[in-house]
Length: 149
Image (cartoon, rainbow, N blue to C red; front, top):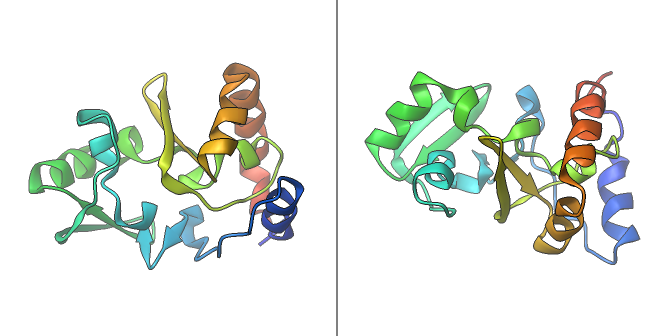
């Protein structure tokens, strides 16, 4: 993975410890083998908060396992996964704006223009929110090259 060392650089630059990066298969960030660490991506839109998914409501998409709080949420995701999946494969939106890959936590999230974005921490999310249009534009530009070989 190109620029994988960026995770450590981003974390250390801000006095954070680098969280382990689990996988970049299909460019989806996973923790414990699960996208968003098992958090239901649809719940961010329907409940306005991160909600743990359940093992009985699993779905494989883009080489990652996604969990949902209900069969209904799983069905919504299955019908239109791009509408519910986090941007940048669930990698940190703030780091992506700098051309880097960094892990995320489910609690550092925001929906902007009907798109879900995750961040490394709540503090990084606060930094990211300071200039959303410019930072999202930079992340969109850098994202295709972050995992380029």
